[in-house]
Amino acid sequence: MKIIDILIPVRNEAENVGELVERIDKTLKTAKQAYRIIFIDDHSTDGTWSLLNSLKKKYPLSIFQKKRLAGKSFSLLEAASHATSEYVVVIDGDLQYPPEAIPSMIELADENQLIIAKRNSNPISNFIFGRLLFGTQFDIHSGLKVFKRELFSHISTNEVTPWTFDVPLIATAMQMGYRIAEVDIEFSSRLRKGSKLKYLKSSSERMSQA
View 1 (tube, rainbow, N blue to C red):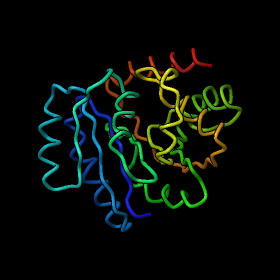
View 2 (tube, rainbow, N blue to C red; view 1 turned 120 degrees about the vertical axis):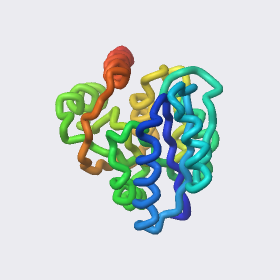
View 3 (cartoon, rainbow, N blue to C red; view 1 turned 180 degrees about the vertical axis):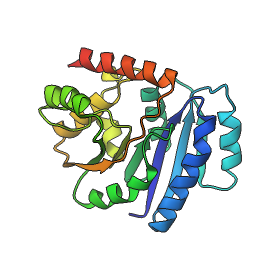
View 4 (cartoon, helix red, strand yellow; view 1 turned 90 degrees about the horizontal axis):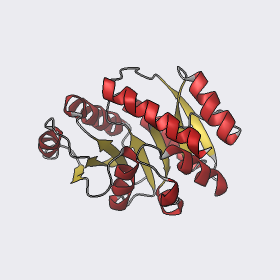
């Protein structure tokens, strides 16, 4: 794979983005995988924007401040508008997902168009959102995925809410006949209060779409 764009939506992640970028760089350099990171900052107030500007001097980063609606889903859509690679990686900016898993996910892209990082610590969630919504055990709302960039252009924005992007993403991929694979990962359960609230909100929104 020539180059891959890594899309990261952030809001007040100053304590995490430095380590995340360093780990991505180390991992992909070791794998000899060219990359670019596209950050969309949703109006952070904790110094995230300044830190990203500093990191940009050392790493292949493109950073943008949010222009449209608030919420992770719309940040991803904005990030996608700046991507050019055939495949993209989406990963949360809070260090819950290991960037070290990205190379093994990219390797599966030769035979699959969507690769999901599966959190083995989340069997109940996998059942609820995978089995009940799609008849599968996919980790639907995993925050680490690799997929063909073209998928963005086929997702109906009418189905996207601020915190619900995964359901229309998976549904569209299945409708298009994408081959889907999963890679087991070690998931960090570090959740701040704000992250927990967003998780509950997104869970509620996903169920309302079923």
